[in-house]
Amino acid sequence: MREAAVETDDRVLGRIDRGLLILLGVAAGDRPEDGRYLAEKILHLRIFDDEHGRLNRSVLETGGGVLLVSQFTLLADCRRGRRPDFLQAARPEEAQPLYHQVAGWLRGGGASVQEGLFGERMLVRIANDGPVTILLDSRER
Image (cartoon, rainbow, N blue to C red; front, side, top):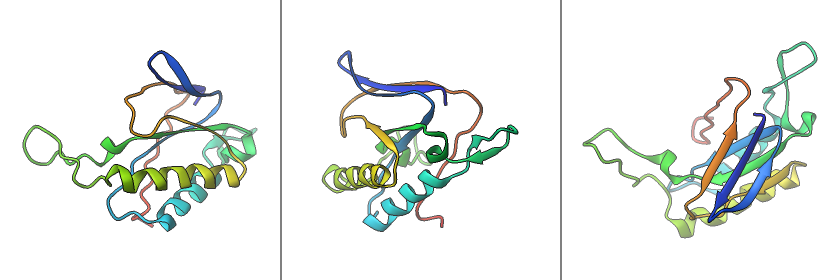
């Protein structure tokens, strides 16, 4: 990704240049070990080009930033009817602490992390440079 930013009420909350935009959905029943697993995986995934153009470098190796944005709508169930339900998403009082823990683990692992505001309506801007979009699910280990 070339750059990303998250804004609310015409105010920039976080902005990064080259790096990762992480949309984090917390499911009901997710535990701290799920968040730690995701943080470790995010930090060490080899998804950036090396000097030969191969996906062989992590965000830590490139010095890229991480923009973390809470996104409960990733847990939408659209199988029935025309209106998605979000029953699989954790309630805000359960999801918010885990969201902040993930941010802390990313920082503790050496990443430069910017964040959105948990539970707020935000405008997310992304300039994607290449077709790399990856879904990580802590329950699919």
